[in-house]
Image 1 (cartoon, one colour):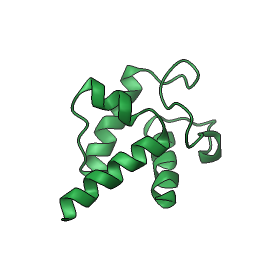
Image 2 (cartoon, helix red, strand yellow):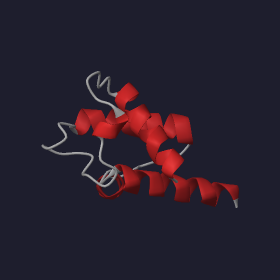
Image 3 (cartoon, one colour):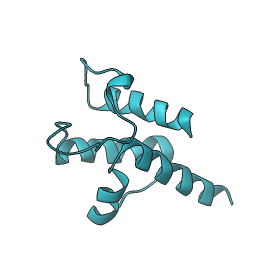
Image 4 (cartoon, helix red, strand yellow):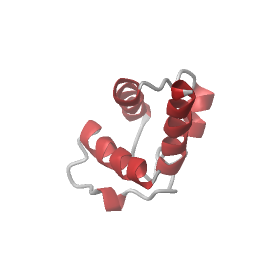
Amino acid sequence: MEELIQELKVKIIETLSLLDTSPEDIGTEAPLVGPETGLDSIDVLELVMMIEKDYGVKIDNKELGMKVFASVKALAGYIHEKRTETIH
């Protein structure tokens, strides 16, 4: 799971072109979206598309998105859970 969290941090930086940000700058349990992060709804849409493309996991409604994007840890947990369901 820790590997997935680190991978997601790198992909978030790449997807959103956060040039002055390193993976260490993104808190694992810190809110991923909101005024403190500077990420907005356009950024979230880009992340949703990256997650669908790279992980084959859909985030198809706002309520789910709010839960999943609560933190990098929540996002990693959701991706891990959905990928595990697909395998079984």
